[in-house]
Length: 318
Image (cartoon, rainbow, N blue to C red):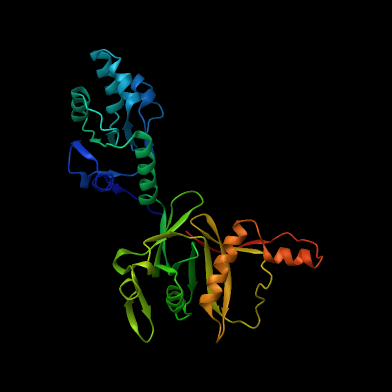
């Protein structure tokens, strides 16, 4: 899997940062770590575990520490830190930047920026942004829709009816995120987020009609830029020799970027209303996450002993 980076220019634009000093155009400076750091103990000279690829954040604490030093001690402290060439330094709370800090950043070619945001708020915002921009990602064929607040990835062979199902779902008040190609990112250890490539966003291909723009036809309420992926609905042709799940006790999964995502397999036959099935699957998945399982309730009502669910990985996407 490839390593990803984001330019400092994009971070500056996103967070409206003020440029105090940059050694070269921000478009040429790449940030490759989704973690950030506050210098802290590094200013005392302990640098064993310092990671220079992280953006550095300075707030009241760091400035208070530096202000209590003599000029010589301050030069040494900044030298311990900046000679390691961190990716960038950001001063929060709109604090005045003393000449000694600016001069040290110029000396060691470290970008120096400033934000008016409070330190904690800026840290949270920056980490969330970096997690998304630098997340591991793949692109897969399918359709991603938001149904009753659940992100549903619809997969299946070409011609299975994925796009037609998406159109029917849009007509029923749900929202399209991506058609044909879905970019999937792992934004945390357990969360996947899907979006559409920018050049085909909002477009849907319908056989017999052609390409349509869902946003222009159905309005802004019919589309959404991103959505977490909560479940997969796999469409396949009906196979009379295959035993399809009729209870919903066992759990099938797609393992996507090391995250297990629940999947249901829906056999296609003439006359089946796939949009209604997807709606029901989304509500049932949400209900299961809240701790209720209709199949187990039925077994209890019938006096049948409860059984353990069998978990099975159907596909792995990496």
